[in-house]
Length: 248
Image (cartoon, rainbow, N blue to C red; front, side, top):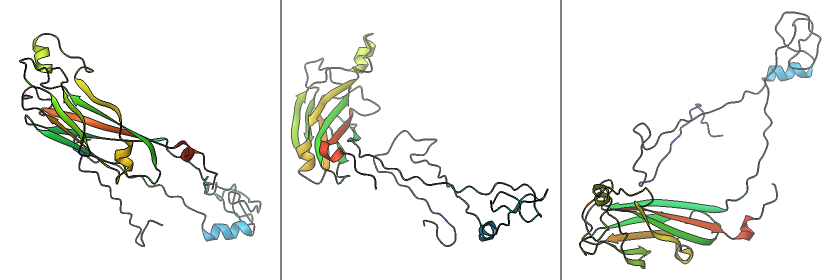
């Protein structure tokens, strides 16, 4: 039972620190609790049902039926329908085939670095494979003056997996030149489906992704940030763990 003796029901929810945008009606956390209660037959109804005394609407003669919905002993008429007790059906659900997590990263200054942290230690099942994809929003990465306008490095748990990559576009200059970038062009895939299984399974499941831009990336910020993007991880489980379990 989750209700206390007074009948009060306290419901509390919490969100993580990285839930920091796109509020619903001004609230980063918004929800509506819904409670449904079922009413069982009273002791009086059960007792009268067992001895043949029914209850009804008092408009006619009863027939003494033991049905809770029928009139009884000639003092009640056609019975009103009694409460319906729902039959609870126990269902079983299969195990998930994959688990996916993602987090944004961003920083506002030239030469800055930004971090995204993920915790993949959320299951007792071992992962078979985990793949990481990192996208970066285009800002000042066109190197139009021959300067170094690049992603200097991308690290996963302190290990460099990508270095000195130039995404190649400046959306502001493209707009001024009458050749605005498409939505697809505005997002650069820095890392695609990179295998990080060992990084996840060899430690405690925590994954730290850090990205740094060069000092010459200094204009055309995306939503106020010279570096911004998203890290996304998908892990799947070993096939033998996904075999259907017998019903309990």
